Image (cartoon, rainbow, N blue to C red; front, top):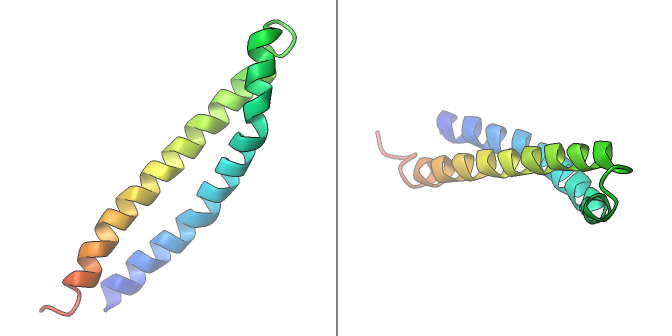
Length: 80
């Protein structure tokens, strides 16, 4: 039971981080298209958008790892 509470805490801690990075990445997605069209003008925005996309992908990867660990914890949490 304690492990389930701990894993749930880990999952809840990761959700806002993932959501924040996904929202920022979605906002910056049109700027990536603009950066490709006008390369020199939006070079900094282009690099910033790539960084946020990588952060969003990293957060999603962490979430999937937590979920793959949470499902066995729920299934086998009562077995001693």
